[in-house]
Length: 319
Image (cartoon, rainbow, N blue to C red; front, side):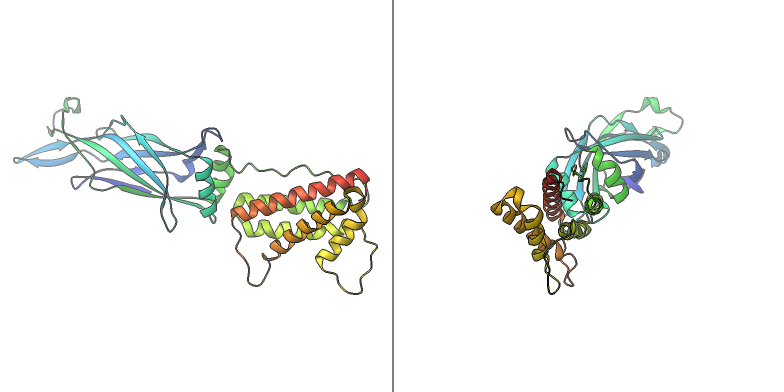
């Protein structure tokens, strides 16, 4: 992407930004977004002064920038100020890095507003020095600053960082998105394949969480929760297809209650049944759209409840 630097109605150069070169830095201690810019100069302007052709050079002294997330409010995410850039139009180009400081709350805000790609707008403002015009045959070493001028307008660069780069590269580099599934014990008895199926669903939920597809996170958690009563055969018989809570209560009564007691078992059933109801909204005809905070709550609770039940069953080798 090319963006012109316009000073006194003259295009003195342009700025380029390669999306693939944008990176994160600092991990979670000092997270920041590094945006490399390539500042290019055009050939020195030839102007007419008192009937004589002369060369007009400029020097970019400082560069300040504002990074906005592109949403309905164009929210400011961070700012950067580079002093002593000292780029002369006698040079061909200069590469400089903009460093945008971030923090956990800013990254959370970006993630909550990101559907897939990370969309930003970079606003660049320059302070430019104007050299005294020189004759065409005079070397540029004899340049003398005449005045300081601002570019005609801010330079606006749209930054659309692909989801693949943002999630796989940048988020880990700023210490964010490094989620991993908690270790869930797998009992050794014959039904352990069913526990592995639940863990596989949670693995997929974590993968979708990293991609920012929160409805699929919830959908896979629902499958994991729904599979818990099937971890082992229930001796209770039903005359018709039981509801989820009925199946869950029967499973807990038969395999969990002796270890936890009546009150804790009741809480486990209540928590899982509530999660199942919430997750079922992801497959309802009038589908609810889940956001990042919803996904964190559902995925976290599902994972720990599965681990809790697996630990109990492991102790008793009930599955």
